[in-house]
Length: 469
Ligand code: XIL
Image (cartoon, rainbow, N blue to C red; front, side, top):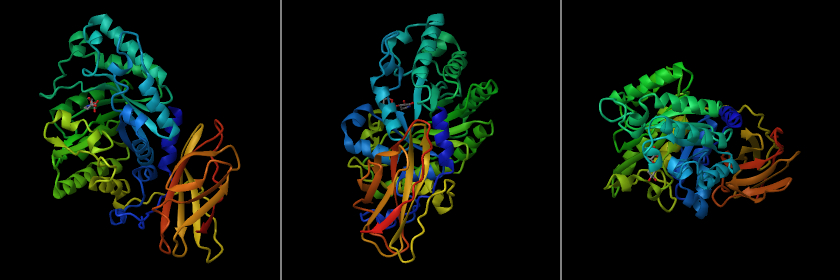
C-alpha cells in the first residue's frame, strides 16, 4: 500500500509527456490536440488513475489485450476475479489463482489495483446467503480479513461494500446482508477492512449516485457517519451511464463528498447506446466521456476513472441491457473509438493543464544542430521498479531516431512501449516504433517503459544520447 501511495504521489509531480502529432497512422488528426500519446501517459502526468476492469481469461490468453491494458492504463480492477464467488466459493475454501494473476500482472506493469469487492448482495455464494446473525457476521469478517490480508500492500484501495442502497427513496437495499445483520453490517465491514489493511483506501461503491438524488443522499449520510469514525476514505461512483445522460448535477454532487474530506472515484464507467451505433451517437458518446473524465481530472480529490472493460465486445452491457452496447473506448479489433480520443483530451486537461517536471529530467544539451534531443524521467517509482517516460524532440526533420544510455545501477527494462531495440541490458539502445519515427523539426514524441531494480534503491535518471536514424 505504502508503495502504491508513493507511486501516486510521485506521479502527481510526474513529467510532461508531449504530443506526438505525427503518428504515422490514420488516427493522427485525432491525436493532434492531445498532449500525450496514451491514456496512461496523460493520466500519469496529472497524477490520476486511469483504470480498466480486466477479465482473467482475456488477460491470460490474449497478447493484444494484455499489451493494450499495459500500455493504456495505470490501474486495474478485476472485473469478477476478486468477488466472493471467485475467491471463497465454499466456506473457508479460498481460491486466489485468478485474483493473484491480475495483481501480479499489475505489479509487473507498474499499475495500481483497485479491489472489488468484499460485501455485495450479488455474486456471493449461496452458502453465505443462507447464513444469518453471528454466523453471517463471522463469515463476513473472515472473508474480509483473508482477502484484505492476502493483498495488503498490493491492492491500493477496496470497494468494501457494493450497492447497499436501493433504488427507491434512498432506503437500504433489501438484501440478505440487511435481513441477516441489520444496517450495522456496513460499519462492521468497514471496521474489519480498516483493521485488516490500515493503509488501504476504503470505498463505498454504488450506481445511480452520480446525480444529486435520494440514493446519493443516502450514500452521503452513510459516508458522513463512516468518515466521522475514520472508517471511510472514498466514494465510488460506478457510472454505468446512458448516452446523452451525464447528470447535470454530477460535478456538484461529487464535490459535496469531497467537502466531507473524502476522495471520489469513477469506478465502473461505461456509456451505453442502442446498437448499432451511428457516427453521431459515437460523437455524443465521446462528448459524454469527455465530460465525465473532465470532472475527475479537475477535482483534486478524484483519484481516477476506471472504465468497465477494454473493448465493446468485452462489456457486460449487452447481456444485462438488451439492445444496448458499444459502451467502451476500444472497438473489438482494438481500434480506438472517438470516446478514446476525447478521454485522452480530458486527461490532458483539454490543453489547459501544464504539468510540471519535478524529477530532474536529464536533458542532453545537444551540440547545436544535432538532430534530436531525448529526456528520461521517472513517473512512478515503487520499491522494486518504476515507470519511466521518455521524450524525443526533433531538432530537424527526422525519419527515425535512436536513443542510448547506460544504467548506473541495477535498473533493467522489463517492458516498454513506443520504442524497440536492445532494451533489457545495462546499456540500452532503442529506436522508434513503426509509428513515431517521422517527426517534423520541433516536434516531440514519447516512449515509455518499466524497470525492475534492487529493492528500495532509487530509480536513477541516466543521461540519454539521441541520434537520427
Ligand atoms: C459485472 C461484470 O462486468 C460481469 O462480467 C458479471 O457477470 C456481473 O458483474 N456493478 C458492479 C460490477 O459492481 O461488479 C458489475 O460487474 C457491474 C455492475
